[in-house]
Length: 200
Image 1 (spheres, helix red, strand yellow):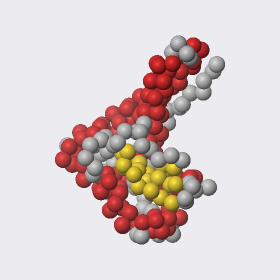
Image 2: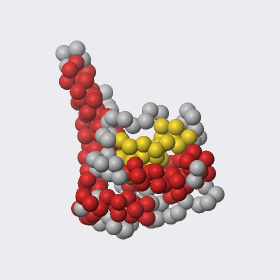
Image 3: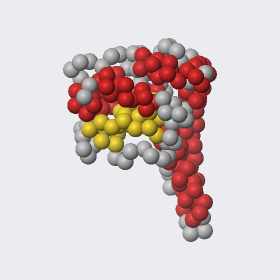
Image 4: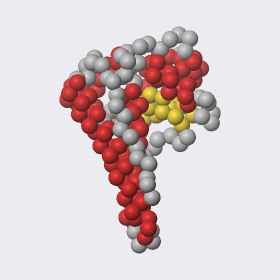
C-alpha cells in the first residue's frame, strides 16, 4: 500500500526580535525531524499490521509514539507560521479579538492569563484553542504534546516553551523576556486566519 506522506512545510521567517537566526534554524531542524519520524512510524505501522497479532505489543507502542511525532509536527507548524510576514497587530474589528473579549472579558485580560500559563515551570506548550462544540476559546498548558491536547479543538496560537525554543538566546532565567518577544514577533493576521478557518 502506498502511504501518503506528510510534507515538511517551508516557512519564510524574517529576522525576529530576541530569537536568533541560529535558534530558528536549529528549531526548524527539530520540526523537520517530527515530519520525518511521523512518516517513518506510519511506514512501520503498515509493515507490522500484516501480522498484527504477533506484533500487538510493538504495534501499540509505535502507534502511541505516533501521537508525539504528529502533534509535534502540527504544533510547530502553527508556531512558525505565526512569524511569517513579520509582526502585525490584531485589528480592533477582527472576529478573533471580539471572540477573545467575549470569552475572557478583555484582550488584555486574556493576554495576561496566557502569559501566566506560559510561565508554568517545566517544558510544554501554552495554547489558545477554539472549542468547536461550545464555540468558545480556551487557554491550556500542555506538558507533552502527545498527552492532554484538547479533543476536537482547533489550535489557534501555540507558544513553544520547551527549552530548545529559547534557552540559547535567553538562558533558563529569560522565559519571561522570550514570551514578551514572542508576542512582539507575532503576525496576528495568521492567527486570525487560524481562528476563521476553525470557526467555519
